[in-house]
Image (cartoon, rainbow over all chains, first blue to last red; front, top):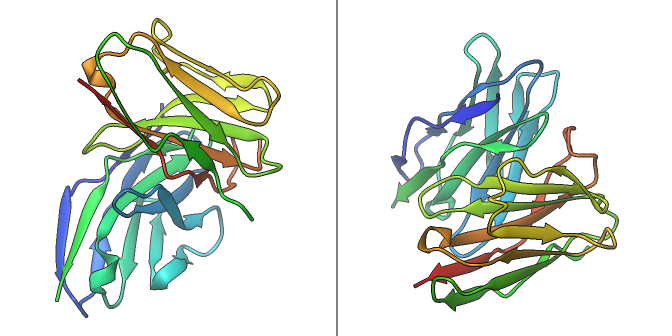
Length: 110
Length: 116
């Protein structure tokens, strides 16, 4: 069975500082990995995905994620956080059904 | 392109009543998904359709939940009778692929159910 773990319920960061939201996964075979963001009263929006190739994936709004096969991790990063980045972030894994982690709330303070 | 449409956005019912949610996916998307998102948790897949066939409904509480996608386009999710623990946001999503690939799922805004 595949699974995703997001070990931090909340991440706090000051505006302008770098941010990291952690994700580890468990899946048989090669994973397809995704990050989605959810703003209040909105559906999930796709940020980026890893399929194969370069371990550093760039996505929307300046976000990027690093795939690490040996550590089975796919951490989300951004060099300089904005207050508007404050939202709920979900890591997810495929193949088979898209399985989500429990989510991490990112709070960026001015 | 138009997104995934869901209705109603909000619904409040009493326990043991019934409720239905409707979803219209992005045109041309073969695969449609219903997810349940309980407050403070990640979305959990309830059922996955490819065209009008069920691919996975292993996590659907079949004693009270049902879903259909009769013509392979829009879909309805029904709960009857509702329980307090069914209070959640019901998210519909669609994707181009058969459901096992790397295509992105596009989500609707969700239908928020409150069971009193």
